[in-house]
Length: 307
Image (tube, rainbow, N blue to C red; front, side, top):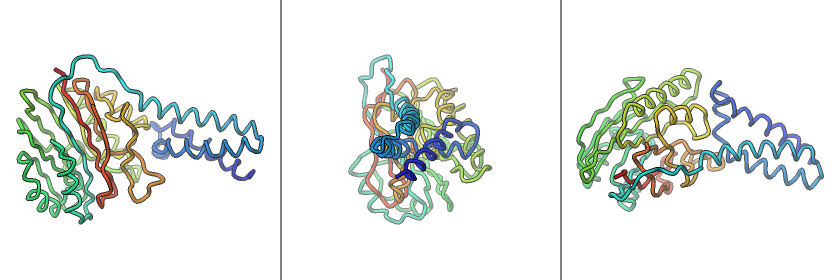
């Protein structure tokens, strides 16, 4: 049992590298597994207490408190001033997985959930040929299919007042940007998918993408929602800096953690698919999908626009 306590102490201290997530890719990676740290540290504390290792218990408790506080502050609900009595609309973000062929399962889920606006990621030509025909309830679309994993599309039941497919870092990785008209109000919806930080170069590319996405959101003063697989969790300093600069708010606040990736590695599943809003929007409800053949769960939210 001493080895369990020793390994627990070592792992807990290493996990505190998450506090340095702004400074290195390794520390940024550590920041995404806060919930797992909390569970594992709590288990080791139980063992440590049973064997009356009080010094070890104290160190473990400090590590637990640090991770617990970070999760708490990411979930702390923020009161938004103003009245929200308008139409509630449902938005959804879904990383399809380029190699996924369970088309019918995904279509059935969409028809059951009945979102009003959907952003699709890893939107390939195969997915385009299927969804463009099956989702006839969504006549307003921006579609940028690709032969790689960075195709993207937006499907909407509401008319698109303005729409484009800009790129933020790399022309091969487009975003979708649309202004929708909803009961006389305009809502800007931006969908994006930065690179996963699998190497130092890709880590820098993701951070640059988030910075430019934040600049885009910062410049917009009317109702806006950002959807995407951002390849980052709410506990990374890069995420917090991006959200703060963009005047955005994590839709998860007060709703739940909602892990979305990876569905094939459930014990280490983390929340990297996001729905972010600015202060003109209130999140009423949120949830994730069942397993749909992708390595991501879809995430959805019911939102209201300020009167």
